[in-house]
Image (cartoon, rainbow, N blue to C red; front, side):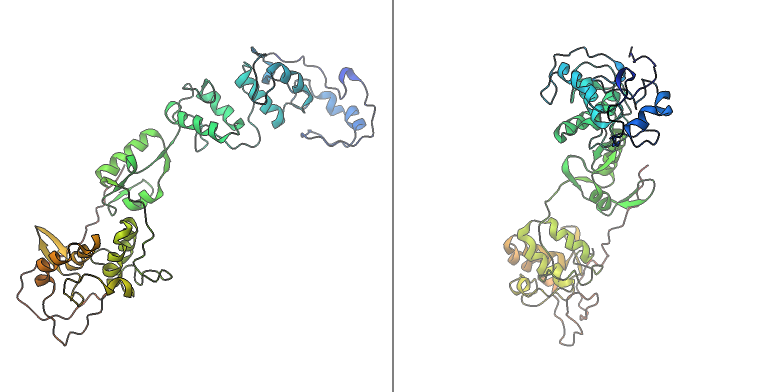
Length: 400
C-alpha cells in the first residue's frame, strides 16, 4: 500500500530553520493558496504552518507518486538516467503539483516499477482514445508503450509526447479498450454505387455521397460494423474508389459550371457530372468537356473541335432523347459521350448503330439547337422510341 510522510506542520526551511535572505522577493513557479511576497512573510505565515507535510504545496517531488516505492531502481529512463539517479534528483524539483514532477512520476510508473499513476499534466497532446473519451473496457490490456491495463493507459496517455508511440497505443486501444474507431461508410476503401440513396443517422438524413464525404467518423466498433453493413445494403459499397483528377467540364477553369442544377446527358445534374468527371480517368476528360460540359452551357471550343458526333458534323437535336439499347434505356447524349471515350475508338460503331434513332433530320426552321436547352424543335417522325423518363428514384432508406 502507498506510504506517506508523517502529517506534521510545513516549514519553509528544513528542520524549522529561518531563511537567510528574508527580504528576497518570491517568484514561485507553482500556485500557493495564500498571498505572500517575501521569504520572511512566507516563513511567518500562519497559513503555511497549517499546511500538512502531505500537502501538494509542501511535499517535495518523489520518483514514485503517492509515496509508493520503485521496485527497479536500476532501470534506465528515456532521458538516459537510471531510476536511482532520477530518484535523487526528483526532490530538487518544485512541489508534486507541477507538470515537471508528474512527468518524472509517469516515467517512474512506466519504467521503475512504481505502483501509483500520477495525476495528469495540465497540458497534453495524446489520449488513449482518439476522441479523448474513457475506455469502455478498463480492464483490457495493451502492450504499447508497455504492458498496461486500459485504465492505466488512459491515465498515462497525457504524458506521452512522441507521436509514433501515441498512435501505436491508440491503434491497440480501439480493439482492446473499446475506444471509438475511425469508421468509413464503405469498408476496404470502396465507393458507394448508389450515391443518392438516403438513410437516417438519427439526427439528420444524409445521402450516401454526403456520408462518404464525411468519413472517417469516430464510432464505437459495434456501431461502425452496423454502419458499414448499411453501406453495403443501402449504398451498394463495393465500387473501387478512383483517385480524383483535375478535370473540369468547362475548359475555362476560372468559372464554375454555368448552371449546376441543369440536366446533363444522363438525367443527372451538371453539378453531378462535374463530380463524375473528376472521378473518371483523366484521359476521358475531353469527352466530358465535349458532351456534358457543352450540354451544361460551357464554352469548350477545344474539346468540341475534334469530337465524335453521332450526327456526323452537327450537334444532337436532343441529347436527352431516350432509346432502347440492348434492353436498357440510354440517352443519346450518353451514347455520344461513350463514343468519345477511349480515344474515340468506338466512334464509327456508335454512329452506325445509333445515328438513325438519335439524329432524325431537323427542319431549317428549328428554333433552337443550342446545347444546354431542355426543349428542342423537331419534326414529328414516326420512329418508335422509348420515352419513359429514366429518373433515378431517390430511395429514402433509414438506418437505425
